[in-house]
Amino acid sequence: MDPKLAEVSQLFERFKAACAREDVDTCCNVLSKLKVLLTGFSSLPPLFEDTPNAIHELTLARDIYEHAVLLSVKIGDQDAFERDFFQLKPYYTDASSRLPPSSQEYMILGLNLLRLLVQNRIAEFHTELELLSSTALENPCIKHAVELEQSFMEGAYNRVLSAKQTVPCKTYDYFMDLLAKTVRDEIAGCSEKAYGYLSVSDARQMLLFSSDNELLQYIKEEQPEWEIKTGQVIFQKAKESASCKEIPSLQLINQTLSYARELERIV
Image (cartoon, rainbow, N blue to C red):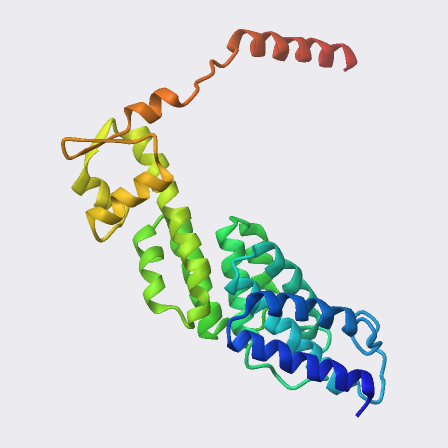
């Protein structure tokens, strides 16, 4: 075996061993070294040179970047996820005809869709969907993300939160928890605008918590401006703290008329 290829393979085994024992610091350090070593292979993107070990090198690099994506989920680093996913993506597209299918591909593509949904990047979500094959769209990992997006857009928040019980794999839990927080923050923002107060029971049901303790913990951590008094959640303090600015209507009318006069002169 080529010495460089053997070195990367041995280092990758160390990386996987560190992942297995959940030694995150070692994983991150070894991963950085692996990425540097991969730059020495001309068979990898963007060159794709046809070297004697090209298939082996491409397969090994794809495995490394797949593990890098999953590590970023484990440590909760969305920026690292995005970087590693875009480094991995050419192996699923440009190199797909040269490599055997990866068992991790649809799971990781589904994770990326979830990330875009959590970050409210809906246009990019649909762009990624357009790039997927009909076979990919039928995969449970992809269908789960698509159904979530539909529920989110419809405002069916109860379906979004209950979807965590049917995730296709445990790795999805990280993004599902973030999505649940996004949904509850959206409901909370609407609630404090629509109501002066709610009973604890009504607030718990509206925010889709299963117990009063979960609601109280959420208020303590995420909505400290809300008050709990005599079994009621009071939003008035939050309303008072929100700054309201008057719209300078007269100024806007004058500006509009001025633009109209200037336009008439030009014509």
